[in-house]
Length: 322
Image (cartoon, rainbow, N blue to C red; front, top):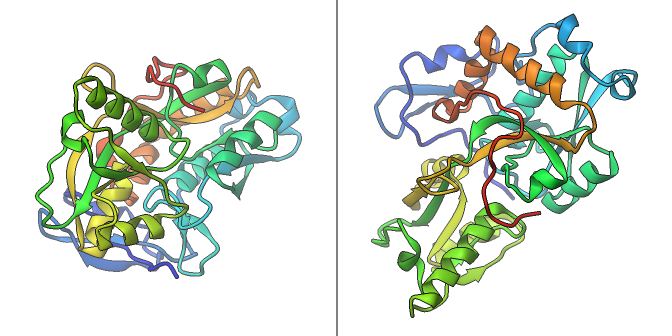
């Protein structure tokens, strides 16, 4: 059974607690750094920020989608999810987190009802390919290979983290630091591709390959980390920061931009290529930014530091991916 928690491990700007709507059911917890408290709502009653329809932007939605009255959003959160990006509320069924919040806010501006559909990571892309989902909102990184099949509108940085057992003494900043180590990663993700490339570099330099491990759920990964079966886990920085604060049994051994120093990885709303929805998504995200709602949504989940200016199909990571 997954443990519900509301503690997030990032320094908070003053006044963040005030971003929650007054009627929200919140839990008050101490911030890990910087002092103070934070109010985070993990109940089913999210009272999301959903802006009113903007007619000029709604008119950009392709008629095929507009006529349904809904925006079908694919979320690859099957299993335990990835708090605070996307996970289930205390009722164990309502999807909450920053990704559902962004998708719901965009749908509001487009005058559409958000239809949030959960799936596995692999089935998320199958759903985009088949047209089952109009858009994917699930921590999807822009890569050059993915741009051949999908269109993107960015809304967050793609920062990664190596999480290790507390007190391990491990510090990870470059490939040699994980040579011969047992490192868990999720299959089919860009962090997997990065780890594979690091392993190749180690071998080319006469070092042992990374012993890459795969688990079906976050719970299984963290059990392996806690028991010493693995040395580290490479995953999204927000998820690792959240878990470090919640469990108190691990720590961040190093962070990575997703592309190194030369290119910042970016997370984007994702559509099947040329399905016509991108102009509407871009305009909706721009509206969220200009109104201040974008900042408020990120602040609810302590992701303010990952804010970006929305872009359509920017340079992607030069690594293979789905």
